[in-house]
Length: 265
Image (cartoon, rainbow, N blue to C red; front, side, top):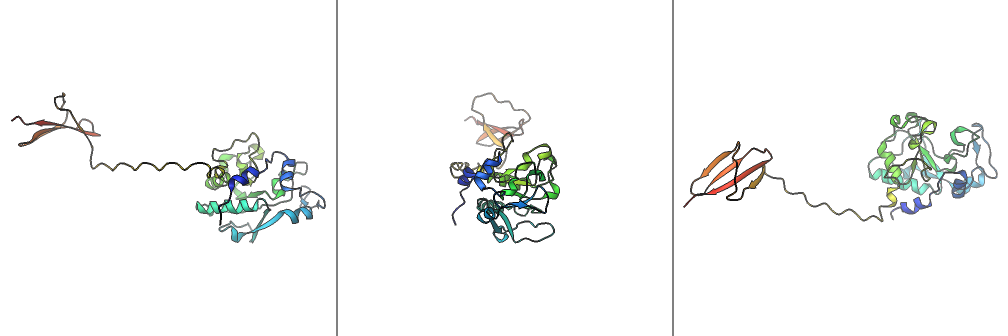
């Protein structure tokens, strides 16, 4: 199995700043044949033609360790056909890092509705099948960044793989549960690691670090030159008969200074 091309996927990812850009990339779920929904005025039943051409179900067997949906069991996650391979590849990267068990709940992906459950606002990215929510009970709308309770290592992995996190949004739009497959929105501060997986193939690997020096068996040793003045401060003097006098200076606890004084003939 060949490695997923994150660089190509991120390059093709839509900006998401305007609904027209999302429609251009993912099609129009509210196009011909779309009808009102019993779920409420902000919801709709998507165009049957659009649904058939664009929505796919990713089996949870392709997403090992996928978190449970509260109150029911699921067998697949419904997303846009262009997002499905990205989701599978991102989840594989999450598993590779041992992070796939850190999410508590899955709270939905495709949802045919308008932003903020408000009919007067544009379509939600969920309506295109290009967004996903996790851990909603701990990360509701408007919860500030410092109170969001979603695993940051998981979020970092998603961001490295090209997803944009709603946790960077502010005020009433803060949305810590939410990840979407679009460029980061204009004016939103993103971390340095955003889209990092796109650059891994083109960035040369860092040179291997030089081997660490062998650990010293004791303190460092400094030999004084013969004839140079040597201050014996708080040290000790040892005489080796027939060889030399050794002066050990222990003033500096990080060093042992040794001067060898040859015996006179």
